[in-house]
Length: 347
Image 1 (spheres, rainbow, N blue to C red):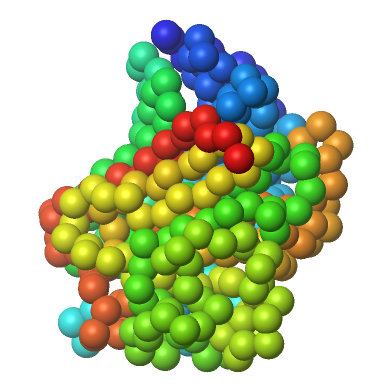
Image 2: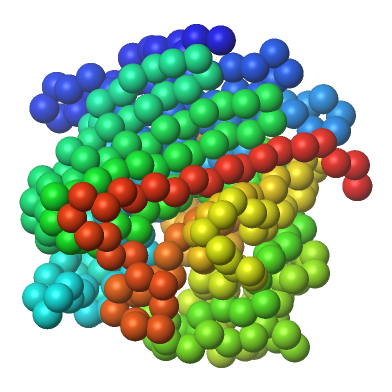
């Protein structure tokens, strides 16, 4: 089925912002926009045949131009946090925006990949967004040509990243969708059941920068190797949760080899979501710091209205020699894929 293209708004400079919608006969539907290559809507049926939009977001492009919580956005060049808002490659230090305490978060609030206008090419059940990031944009070296392709299948939204840079550079991209499997407007996600296929995680210090340690989850509230609700321990008196006001941690995927594998699963309201990735880590964020705001169709979003499962290289991994490196050589291909797959599951 071909993609439907509609006008979504304009930038302050008058550039067109488009909405691209893909639909399946079983009720699956996804809408994405060339503003930030954002995932705007994702409609999924449950075990009773009820179709609901399961991602938080907004009704207008103007709201995505603001979007303080990065809802649905493609994050780059570097997702998550970098200590001291800097990193070094081959002895040369690069400085980024200090936008999260003393650190850098998601590259740049106002000019990151989630805020730029991407070129779009449509295909059957697919939209490919492309962007040229010039040398030193937001502080990153090299001219990077990058694409993000969304493909809708009968049971999944697939997100594929592909790029190459003319200099050695840092690339660590992710998608920042907030999910609520009972529907974006259904309130809290605290009763959502979650499993993460990770026996270890990366503890943080104040400011949410990893210590460099890889620690076991066994015997702690960080353990999601067996299914439990997000809310069961989110407010527990545990140092790691107190530091970031609940879950906002990178989990170390068991048996990572660089191949696609199941990394996490979530369930609520008759909908199961399985997350597949080829990356070593996944950031589980319980939405503890979502500012109260008005979302799609007048819904009120706030704390724990949605959760994120962001596939990634570990936060600050460019500055931690023990972590898998997100640095790519000149002309070395950056390629990764994440799949959010849905099925109907009865309670």
